[in-house]
Amino acid sequence: MLVNLLDKRIFFIQIFIITLFTLLGVTNFNSIDLSNLEKLGIILSLLTISFVGYTDYSNDLISTSSYPTFVYILWIMPFIAGLSDYRIAGSLLLVTYVTAQLLYFESEKNDTYNAFDIGVFMSFAILLSPPLIFLGIVVFAYFLTLRVVEPKIPILGFLGFILPILIIAQVSFLLDYYFMFDFYKEQLMLTIVNFEWKQLFLIPIAIILVYSIVNHFKNINKLTAQKKRIFLLMHFMFIAILTTYILYGGNNDAYLAFLGFSIMLMLTRYFNESKPKIEWLKEAFLWVFMICLLIYNFYDRIPRFFSLITEVSF
Image (spheres, rainbow, N blue to C red):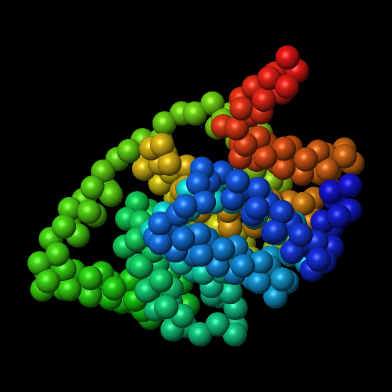
C-alpha cells in the first residue's frame, strides 16, 4: 500500500505527509507557552522542513517520487520539540542548505564561487553549534578532492569558512565579550550520549540503512561519476553527524535531526531503484520505518496512555 502511494511524486500526498507528521512531532511540546527564542527555533525548523520539501519537489536528482518527503519528515518528527533550541534549529537550516548546494556542486551549471558561500554558511552553522566541526572537516576535505579540477575551490571554501569566525572573534574582543570564548569552550566539552530504552526502536531503522548501503555499493557502477562522489560525500557526512551525536549528544537527541537529509538520500535511492527478490520486502521496510519512528516519538507518552486505559476500564 505505501509503495503504491509513495511511488509517484504527487503534490497533495507530499503536503499531507508534511502536515500530518509535523503536527505529530509538535505534540511532544509539554507546553504551548514558549519563549521568544523557542518560537524562533520552531520557525527555523519549519523553514527547514519547507526548504527540504521545495528541494525535493523542484528537482529530479533526489527522486521523482514521494519517498524523500516521507523519509525526511518521519525522521525529523521526534526531534521537532528539541529543535526549539534556536541554535540547533538554525544550524540545521544552514547545514540542510549547504547539503542541498553540495548535491549540485559538480554540475556544469554550478558556479565555482559557490564554494565561498558554502564555507560561509557552514561556518555560521558551526558557530551556532560548535560540535558540528566534524561536519565542516568533511565538507572541506571534499573541496580538497576537487583542487585538481579547480585549484581555487578549497581556497574559496576556506576563505568563506574563516571570514565569519574572524568577524565574531574581532567583535568579541573589541566589546569584551569574553564569555563567548567560555561558551565555545563549554560547547566543545565531551558529553557522551546517554542510553535510553527508546533508542532500541532505532535499531530496525539502522538495519534498513545498512541494507540500503549494501545495495548502493552493489549497484554503484550504474551511477555517473558525479553521483558516485555525491553519494560517497553523503555517507561521510552521515558518519560525521553520527559521531557528533555520540560524543556530544548527552541527554539531547536533537543532533539526530541532522541525519535526516543523508538518510533521505540513502533510503530514497534504495526504495526507488531496488528490486528485491521478496516482493513485499520494500513495503515491510516502509512500515517498519514508520512504526519505529512513531513509537520513538510517543515513547514517553505510552505509559500515560496505558494508565488512562486502565483507569477507564476500572
